[in-house]
Image (cartoon, rainbow, N blue to C red; front, side, top):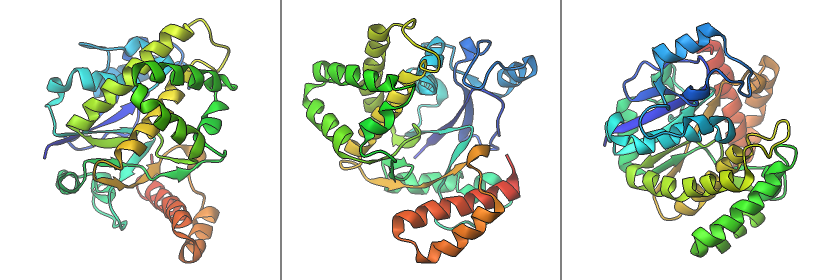
Length: 305
């Protein structure tokens, strides 16, 4: 099985020393405009042009990036699949979140080997599973729709309602199932991260992008307050989680840990020690949380950002 993973970024980040993991710049056509992290320096723009694929070539929606986040990179890969080698499996990570495909952390001579992001390991896993995702985690609110609805100063609550109306028209057989998950589940696989078999990936894209385009038309890009521009992107993350939830029941599925490089999420020495102490006594869900914190601390210390 051939596997290609895309590490999505909008600014300079860690590069991978593997032909199977490619860094792609989401929003290249609007790179000069302000993003959630502000404006990029000229040196950062030059770094992106030199070191990353662009989502602004061929069939693309790069200019939509400030509204739908990393979905512009996912769209580009879908529509330019032959240009990236027509792999049997395709995956997406982020500049600050990487998959850990190893059950046990064993330090190797490279970051990729330590995380299990090697050609051999990817081939082994994709021979067993059609779908690899971050773990299903419990959210803070009582259900998925309430959790996402508060984003963008509650703008996403409105967007979710419009998305459901769109699904009811476009995919009537999915409507009740989607509503049930939104209102009845408080766990999900988030971050818009996954590794999917090609056929499943195409099915996902054919399902989600018409919803996002309809949302864009109905909302209008002038109809946002400050901090609400990314509402479609947050809704896309919610819809991706729903798609994964549905398909994980039909396809062989594996959950893996995620290494979070975001400084605000990095584990301090104190929290690292606490996590180590709690791990043997925690229930399975909390074990995964503590294990993630331990991995995060060790990898930060060993490899840095």
